[in-house]
Image 1 (cartoon, rainbow, N blue to C red):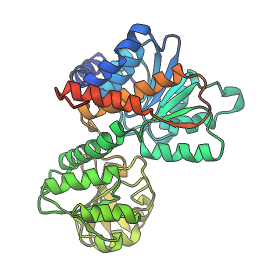
Image 2: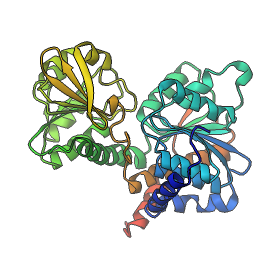
Image 3: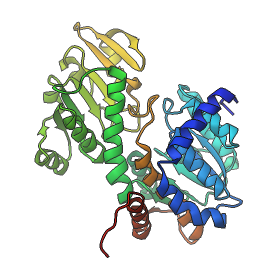
Amino acid sequence: MSIIKDPTLAKSGKSKIKWVKNHMPVLAKVSKESIERQIFHGLKIGMSIHLEAKTAQLALTLRKAGAKVFATGCNPLSTQDDIAAALVDEGIGIFAINGIDDRGYHEHIYQVLKNRPNLIIDDGGDLLQTYISLNPNEKFPLIGGCEETTTGIHRLRELESSNHLPCPMMNINDANCKHLFDNHHGTGQSSLTEIMKMTNIEIAGKTFVVGGYGNCGSGIAKRARGMGAIVVVTEVDPVKALRANMDGFQVLPMKDAAPLGDFFVTATGAPNIIRKTHFKQMKNGAFLANAGHFIVEINLDDLKSIAKHHASLRPNIDTFFLENGKKLHLLAEGRLVNLANGDGHPADIMDMSFALQFLGLKYIVEHPELTAKLYDIPHKLDNLVAHAKLESLGLRIDN
């Protein structure tokens, strides 16, 4: 294990888990029958996921349904040590600690795989990619797994198209009850929450440049506008650019938006969205944040190459002093801003996503005929989650 068994940390983590449990009725409802049937009895589940209270509740629910669970983080900054300690205390196999370096991060993923899980839950694709890279004598059969996020689905599609996908994988990200709520509302709210918490700077009246207008970017743009910001959207997709325009946002290339922004937030999943030519054009004191899964959207090598030096003047903010006399503030090392020592998406939003994760694994177990392909969540399971959510809100609809 890579987390100390600390009773004080564990107590703090258990308090957080208890809080989110009260706000996750959908997961409780859709898992009830499976827990009674012990659907995962005798199976081991490996998870590479943001280790915070809501994912802890998913891990504990899987265990209640009969599984042995082993988990690690999917981002070096998103693990909450008190949650990890609480899960260790509950008997979950944890290999994670906040702030681990890249080498340690990948070693933790390897440690999960050393336990030879039958099923996996991945967030971004690193767990499956590590499995694929194992030596032949380390390989073991995988029944299947679920992928949580847009970036991970891109990687799975590449593996499928090249016939390198080793097992059936469920596409959780594209389920309606995931991307329409988790990506849009969850990312929108949590990103703004963490940016405000880190900077302690007023949003109203500032210019917010949002890179990308997919489900995540559109959620960020709308929340920023709701806070009183002037919002500019950059895009490479003409349809998404038109959507942004018709939603009332100014649409510009990044080179034209760079001199305007007080805050920049990337949410594309693609590399080099903000790079050297843009840094040089930015206002003195501009803030840079990334809401995409990997640390690639803001080109950090370019930023370092034009900086005389940098310093951490406030927790989770690195200030770069440029050769042209300006300074730029990088939030959370360019990693996922909403999960860098934060709580991520709201509990009642992730309730739906994790209900889908649970149902996705259940579907794989109950359909052994599935082959090594990427499968969408069946519409009836998506609707099952939607109905459970409506019921939890006390809402009724027509038949």
